[in-house]
Length: 415
Image (cartoon, rainbow, N blue to C red):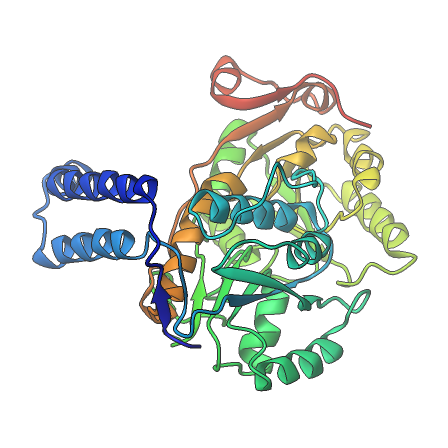
């Protein structure tokens, strides 16, 4: 990847904005020791912590202004995902919106997509056809769904290898564990920077070596895995189950490791089943059989794991299997499941709040910072969503504290 070329045509508005950001950074540097002291409850602030804070803010100020490549041309961004999935589609949507807010891209009006139900590959194809300004462009050729139901891993490997060899792409943005694993571990791509988001536990998946920094020179992964431990504890505090059911196709994506460790601490059991990854013609028939068997196995709660129900029309009828047994349904990821019939979610990820963090890492990398030197860990502030109709069906008592702390309350299930 070529070193960036600074934009010399900074407008007065951009200059004013940069001055404001610099002032904020200086203020943050002044208050940082105080906040650290409060959070650490009296522990001494180390020089290393102060240097880390100063470096963070100085990097943020330095990389605030968009840039081109050294030869003045645009950076080309490639995209990889698993398949159409509202959760990753929303992440991409708000990431793109944040790039516009930060000045990396421009376009008129609003994106002609619904962030609550979006096909990410279609969004990339749309962006590839637009003139987004002088800094970056998206590729409609380096744009893949790696699931065998779509492009398939083998085609992706062959096609992406050719594009990298031809220097057609300057950064790869991967959403999901499977596409990141293909690029990082199976292909061993090290010629271009790789950004990874939308993964449950990239360390356990072997995508990076540690939570704070990746340990791989060209890899950056958003890490946020500890939230799943807190999430299960909250569900148990709200509804003291003894045996919670789960269905997933991959232990890492289903966060089974953090959940099982937490279950041992709580003294409860997890009863799980596995299903194949690809959505074939009989996928939902198989899932219905698994759910029915699980609902009759003695579980008293169920957790809907990530990326299992991909068709919104299937959510309510499949969850009815558990409500017929008075079993509440909690959610690992995605608030929209609650609108479609799940009882409750304490979100472990939120596309809106993650977007500025992703865009900041993106900016640092395109300004020439090695991905391995860009901090990865960002714990998304959790929020609670409740479906009151579903709670009533499961005989789940919603107390006043939950009602007051809920960000969203649904009185009916969207069917």
